[in-house]
Image 1 (cartoon, each protein chain N blue to C red):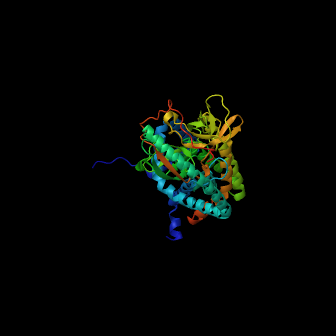
Image 2 (cartoon, chains in turn yellow, brown; image 1 turned 60 degrees about the horizontal axis):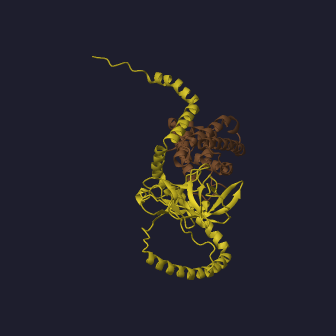
Image 3 (tube, rainbow over the protein chains, first blue to last red; image 1 turned 90 degrees about the vertical axis):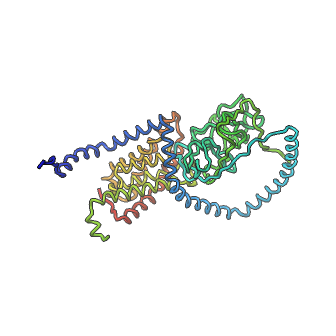
Amino acid sequence: MARGPDLIPIDDLVDASRPIKALLRRFAYLLLIGVAVTLILIGKIETVLIERVRANFSDVVAPVLELLSEPVRLARTGAEHVVDLADLIEENERLAQENARLLQWRIFAKKLETENQSLKGLLRFDPGPKARFISARAIADVGGAFARAILLNVGESKGVRVGLPVMTGEGLVGRVVHVGARTSRVLLLTDINARTPVVIGDPPVRAILAGDNRDNPTLKFIDGDVTLEAGALIVTSGHGGVFPPGLPVGVIAGEVEGRILAQTFVDWRNLAYVRLVDFGPAEQPIDTLNQPPARQPPTGVQP
Amino acid sequence: MNQATFETKTHLRPWFAFAVGVGFTAALTLLAAAPWPIVIVGLAPPAIAHAAIFDLALRRPEAMPVIGAFMIGILLDVVAGPIFGLGAITALGAHFAATTQRRFLAPRGLAHAWIGLVATALALGAGSWLVASLYFIHVQPLGPSLAQVALTAALYPPVAILLRIARSAAGLRNRRA
């Protein structure tokens, strides 16, 4: 009868693995830091691959993040209600005054609307396709100390695609940079990598709104030698096709250490719900370089 | 299962401790990523994961071995953070700080551990700031990093108490150095 190979006793195997285990334990930190540094280098070179991994993982953990963000949302709403109750009388007076002012504006707007309609009729003006809105909830703050980004609970399944502008009722928030099946990642205007072509004031002055991970982004490459006043309105210019023209961004806050800072309309600490605005297919480039700048909403018009 | 039966399965205890420690820290990491209304300048969320890694590596090393810290760091990188890999390095840094200081800090109370955590968070914040500034070739604002350190330091005591409750619920006692 043929004999099988001699089996090595299990105790000998365990003894043999001990030096390897000790070696691994001793150099575990170095080994793992080496892996982490390699990941940093891969992340720098293969950005698309890393973002694809992140998007897929975000889809997996999205239900957990949604569940965990729910008590946060409830706590936030509760706190807001308490503050609202405390300011009820003051808020009522303010709203009464605002209502009186808006009623005057309404008459003015009606007059402008009639005038606008008749002028459009004369010009046979084609307003183009209407914008499509997708409402979404921020389920995670995925920025950290060195980035400004949020994760939304809508993705490709809801028609979200890369490049869509993201807004709140106040103004522009940022744009979609990565999309998963059920989640999407939004780069905020204040992120260090965000560059937004804008126009400022009237007459319009072109500039680039550059984020630097602070709450107030900086205005750079201001067109011409002009003096910009604090409070001047900033809207997107539409140049480069990053954003459509005319989206409200903020106002000029002032000059600090030679930098012209913008005060955005969006309150970055209360980004609970946002709207993604689809103005049309991404393949259609927005060529506004040879077009006149967008007409801006009135700022100080007295009816 | 009674206590006697549980104690006999000693070979399962490290794995159980690992699952409890890393699982609980992962849950805290995801909770910290929720969109909290941060009122301190810069919108920087606290590094809850680092606080949890530090505390577990200090009090119950079996529940947070170095590979566990690395896994939590990768989770941090996948969920958030602009630099993929930086979360893993800082998580390993928090683990290393706790491991090297364990002999001194573990027999002492929460106040000593808190001082250790503040020093570690400051060192990790400074290191991350340096790496981020080099990575983006742009000097990063210090405000968000300092705010993150302050928030992490402020939230460490509740995190430590929460982890103590979780450990005691799972039947894992603190280990003295």
